Image (cartoon, rainbow, N blue to C red; front, side, top):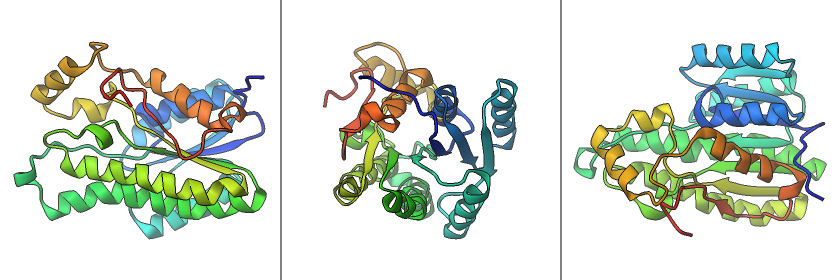
Length: 251
């Protein structure tokens, strides 16, 4: 029987104040989940989302965390224990964008991209996986990108980070599944978010022209994939990368 209910579950979503992360927070809460989320440099949107959910009677908490910083992730884990209790579902959605040709790519820009996406996914997962393992149930959902498979000009640092997340997901899935914890990832195509709008007009026009569906995606078209993987109906997905991408990559 199909069951997408998250009643009795608790989730933490990184990068949850806007875009895909916020859509996941709202969808999880609508399906009965207790939700917490973190963000970095987005206080206004975080407060708006919290007020919106609170007004509708949903249980939600939020905090600030740069997921690339080990000490801040340690603080996130301590905060979550107080604000949320045990976390059953972890969604690693924090991310940044950037459009730099390889010749323009600095070490700092490369390190920052890897730090937020790949290092951040590792640091946060390291904090929350052990308790899931010990309880014998958990869901870890990482965010990659269709560009991990396809590549794109001006995106070598981003593609490297996102490809690393796919490999991390597959490897950890082998270790986690025998302990009742599934680890999967989502690799969206281009979606109408602030990150996409921050890229050049030329890049966005080029990308839209490549899509068989002829348009960019919406955040509400991505969040249901996370709901599937978080729910009991997604229990047979192990080490997979699901890719709602409008046909940009036909996996």
